[in-house]
Image (tube, rainbow, N blue to C red):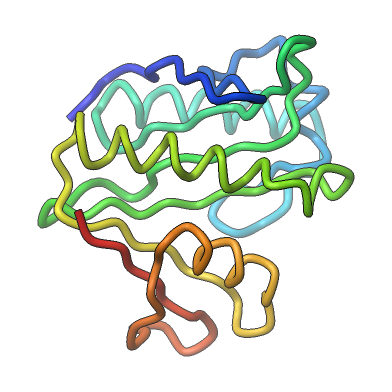
Length: 160
């Protein structure tokens, strides 16, 4: 597993390691274990936990920034380890930037890392039962809905 965050480029985005300088841009889009964060101190603590998880090889977490200005508009990453050659992706995008295909670009880049560098066999994702926008993003990216192991979430999968 990787213990660093690869720098990724798409046609409109830069996916990069998040730093403490990003904390104010992260505040409106930050969650940790499904719960929203409300203060800059919580963001700093989250960034420290993310870095520790990256160092341990348990996660890769990117900030999604617009080219060329570098404004953080979202985050995406692999979470909860890589058991059985499976990665789980999660993502969030600032509401102002939804519906423009940015998340499609980011998912495509992240899947390339998952399948080509991490040598994963499959990648999974979960969406809330009523989150049709995220379900559509995953479907467009090539994921297929599968039986979920969690009552309040839909489970999606894509194979190498």
